[in-house]
Image (tube, rainbow over all chains, first blue to last red; front, side, top):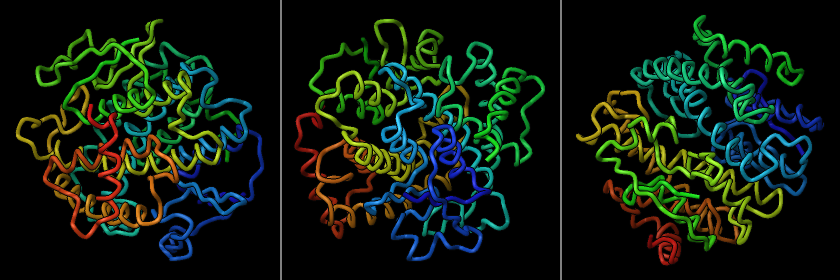
Length: 209
Length: 209
């Protein structure tokens, strides 16, 4: 198996952290996104959507999309469970994970891709060119304020995002928040529960990678 | 268990079709989205994001987000498997499902919510108001053209979206396409493989609901 990664990008970090929490060792290939390596035909053979992360299995099967990489790894390496043991846990974790991807990760990507000079014409990932929409970057800032409010309520009631234990939902949430923090949307002082949770998750060895 | 549904909305149709494919029977509660029932405090207790579908379990746990409802049902009612039996199947199905949600479902929602007169101030779901961004509706049309091209290539090689058998990825894709067809983006004549697949999936009893 090979893991196609890019050290500075948030999406592959989700899978990198998941792999570390599982305690498994997978050879890593760094993809030069800034040099456009992901848009070349050789990479499109691995992933026609031209994104990282990708897991290339020994039989040649390639799995892209961060949550799908995690799903494969969860099934292939069940311990420790990060996506739930019982049906209820599986459903609740999937709910929080999917929601925080949308409210945090996608909002953060819309902010960055619709404002950064170097991403002109690259407002969406993939081989097609899409122009930036500045209003979308602005909307993202409002969405993140809503997200922080929601998460603060949640972490006032629950130690981890999906309940009493650490799961893939915490991974997606941590990386979404670090992504928007890099865009100068720090955790607001009036959201202490988010800060408590962020400190705890950030202290895990898997979060250092 | 109860299933909070809305007959005309695309997201709950994903779970409705999944339930029918599993052959299970769950009491349905229709939520009056046009009357704003999903924005009232009683509904927000079930789902703070104010969306359908929601599954309310007998212990009071509520699961929202369509794919998370499916994940719970898949674990609780494993036969027939719709999200994969082996680790590789699980990963590949999750990849296609997640991708077609983004390229089809989200693009379709952006088209509708950023253009329909009745959705002014409702460009995103949930309790917060977000103004429409007309360029986003326009961008959605281009995204759907790209999606049709990608799906035609895929269905020229594969009977179903994620491989040799019907899965949740076909459900999400069918409903995404029916959603954009209602917005006058019919399957183009030059995409015969999409039409072949659409005819086959549409003929399933679960697709009539």
